[in-house]
Length: 331
Ligand code: EPU
Image (cartoon, rainbow, N blue to C red):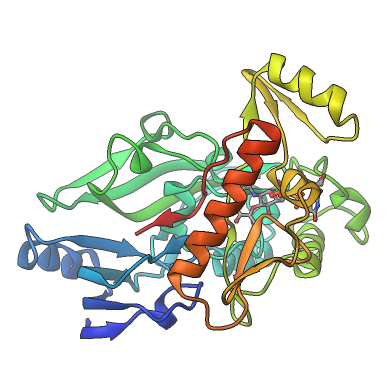
């Protein structure tokens, strides 16, 4: 266990902002976590993994708990699949690298997504037609108030688009310490999204899909080790059929994806159409290659990012009548 007081959070989150936490503790086991929860009971607690989906809007006057639990093991194997239990602090992409080496299928489309195993369940992370929920078999968590362990079934997690019960009814109440994924030995592969199938070199396999996804991502998403960001800043909005029909007349070239409850419109396309690419607010900038991403171009302050995001949201509302919502969590 490593403890810090009044520490800079710059290297503990991917936006790279100069913000501080009153206390930060890195823990390595559930036992350590439980004793920390007991010690800091009643205080403001913020569990984080890689900090890849956070926007610290000011210094954090509480206790940041960073998971350094990063083991993974096979629990059970059948002819078709393998159950893998991974600890919450393991970097998701490291796990996917290991699974690919073992030729296990299911998570390869999520290659290169920043963040941890714990976050994969809380956020139901997704990319290239696959979401974490498609392979999650159970989620292990500890109640912040009592230190009690609980295993959640996928149904109990109430997964949605970048969403789960841990972001809603149970927000701030549990820390995810482990996720069990069901991986298969022989597909099926998901190759329908965008230009993924053309990008694969050779026969589809966890290895070739992982390589293709990493190549596509590198071409248009910033590497958080080089340029601060939190991946997509906004979620893609879903609009009603009436709203869609009106907009489609005005913008016949607008891409869309029919959903059960309306039409999903890529926020990147809207923001691009409104001319935001490359626009700056102080040190914050709309990324030129993928305008859904806001980057810390030059020592951005949290205010720069908040102002830029608010200006984009307002212009989308004004021009398209669409309310877009951040995917990142404002702290
Ligand atoms: N587009 C533009 N201009 C651009 C870029 C994109 O008009 O400069 C339009 C295109 O029509 C394109 C569409 O936006 O087809 C969608 O773009 P993209 O395929 O890059 O996906 P996205 O919807 O912007 C989502 C996820 C990403 C994930 C990609 C690929 C969300 C909020 N974001 O982005 O996830 O990598 O799909 O599956 O759903 C993240 O969550 O942090 C993230 C990076």
